[in-house]
Every structure is written in structure tokens, then in C-alpha cells.
Length: 269
Image 1 (tube, rainbow, N blue to C red):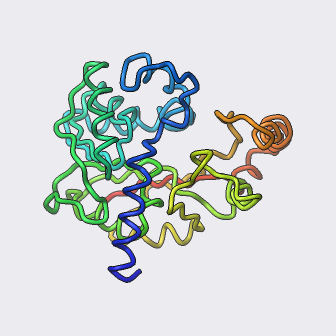
Image 2: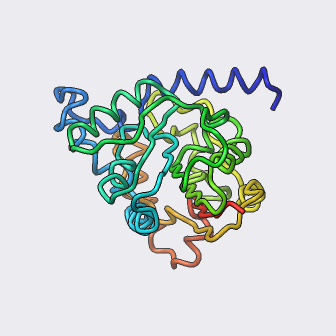
Image 3: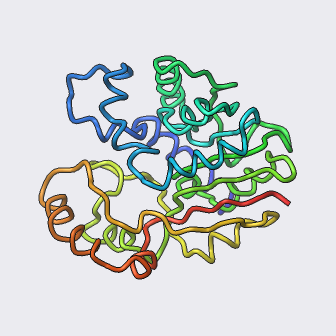
């Protein structure tokens, strides 16, 4: 993508996510004060790592390897993932493209009593950190919405120490059940009124080809079962009572072929 076009894309991505910090779409009680303990407790069941059953075991596994070491979180959102690493003794630098997310993450961390090494705005396409800084990088559901997934993965590699671990979860796959649903009636994936300006779906081969300079340790299909949605309306009804129960009857090997997301664990070489 030409530089000028990419810059415009980054601006639109920043504008969108600064107004739509991930988690806002799950607030069902408008009377809850934003940024309070009650607020974070209210949306927690819909957030990583509780919504997706594979995320907490992945955090446990990675944190065991990283206790006392330095992890960079890209796209911290409201601070749910990073806080779990901090609870497990990992030294975490939390970053996000938007000031709104960093502000919310700081409030969340303060409420639950954890403290990152740093919390700051960063663009993963142009990270401010020197080469070979971190022992690991965690990015969940982020790199495919940046406008240049390949460049984002390259920056992840640059800031990792030799032998450092990249855990890049929830890259959107095609073909997948969500890819086709997203094309039906322009059904939004994230927010009801407006979806992100970038939401790339790629094949596994396309994603894995981007991990140049890495040894891919694991590439797994995630979200191969249809989970509950925090939605209302006709489409949500059809999803919940027609598509979800029928689709979830598929045998696991077949369901994985249509999994919504790809997660990659790779070591910098």
C-alpha cells in the first residue's frame, strides 16, 4: 500500500477505535458509570480472555515461560489480557493506538491492583521501541485491523530479542463461517452501527507467509464453534437459535476447517 494511502488508513483506524474502544459494545446497562469496577465487571464475560475458551490457557502457558521477563502487549484495549499476565509475574508494557484505550486500561489496572512497566500509545506499524527490546509480544485480535498486517508482523519481529516469542492470536481467516456471515446483508462484526474501516480476512497460507524471520511453533484454528453474541434483533435471533445450534453440531475436524480465527505462536530467529 502506498505511504500516503496507508497514512489515511491509519488515521481512519485511529479515529474509529478511539471512539469505539473494544468493550463498549457490550454495555447493556446505560446507568453503569464508565471506568468503574462495576463497569469492567459488567463487560468482562464478553471480553478476552473469558469469552474465548482458548485464550486463558494460552496466557497461562506463555506466562509460565515469561515470569520476570518483559512482554509487549499490542492493542491493550481496556486492559483485560495484559492484567492477566501481570498477575502471573510478567513485566508488561501495554500499548494501544488510541489514547481512549490507554486511559481505560490505566483505570482498570488501578482498580484490580496491577501495574504495567509502561502504558502508552503506539502504532504497531511504527513502534518507538529499539530493536531487540522485548522477550515476547502479545497481540490478540489486532494486527489484521491495522491496514498492513505484514508490516505489523515485521515490527513485532524487530522489537523482539533473538529467540523472543510472538503470540499473535485471532487473525481473521477465510474461508470461515464468519467471513461468509460478514458478507450477508453487510452484518457488522463489531459494533451495530459501524464496523472498523479495516477488518482483513486472509487464508492461513497468506498469514504464515508474513512470518519471515520466525520459526512458527504453532498455528491453530480458533473460534471454530459459534459462541453467544451480545446482540438483539432479527439477525441475532437467527444466529442464536438457527445458525449456532446447527453449526455447532458439525464434527470438530470439519468445524475447524471453517474456524473464524487463526492464532500463531512463533520464535524470532
